[in-house]
Image 1 (cartoon, rainbow, N blue to C red):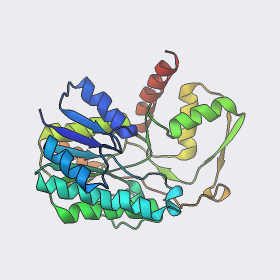
Image 2: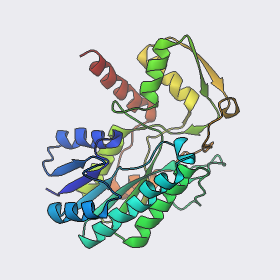
Image 3: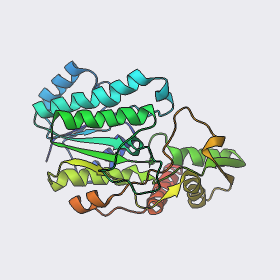
Image 4: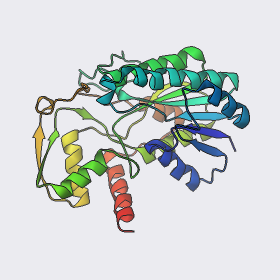
Length: 289
């Protein structure tokens, strides 16, 4: 079985990979926190790679606080660009393959069309800009990489939109949710399954791929589905982005085309609503323990 290192291993996606890898019987996968797997500390990385000599590295480590990043550009760039570059260098040195997780925020999102991997990138906030720079660092430094762009990630782990909506829906009589930003929610468990499928496939079709669940929705309709499936009664009001200004501008339309990853790795991708049902079932079980 391949030796795998997961950086950002205690974050949302890392915990999902842990859950799925345990289910699949992995016993040679190491989940690293931000201290023991500090992607900015080259001495730490050098010692870690020398000791573990991994076959595969999964980079889930990232600066993801989108609004905060506007005021924290240097640290965001260090983690998302320089950190990704550090991992690429050590993967090249130790002949490990790299799977690097990126984002739909590398796109401007100003046109209502499916975004494929060859479309022009033009990020409109610091987070998106630094994630794109990280992609470019990886692709510049060596060629044995998979970049997976994903969107609107949620799960039963960590803080995310689904858990926040369920909490607010139980606390308040009414909520306003943005209706004019459109994309696709991604259940991080599904993404974790896809990541391990790619590794297990031993398919060396390196490059950039898009992965989210199937389908299209707005944040408003996503929230409505969360409340309907959770059987939470709350008055939900659609509001425009202009009524809820944020420090970072978000893409208005960032629905990604998944044809390339489905064909290359023979993946079946669930619809976002079907996966949302599964997540909420898991959350209900956890809350009722």
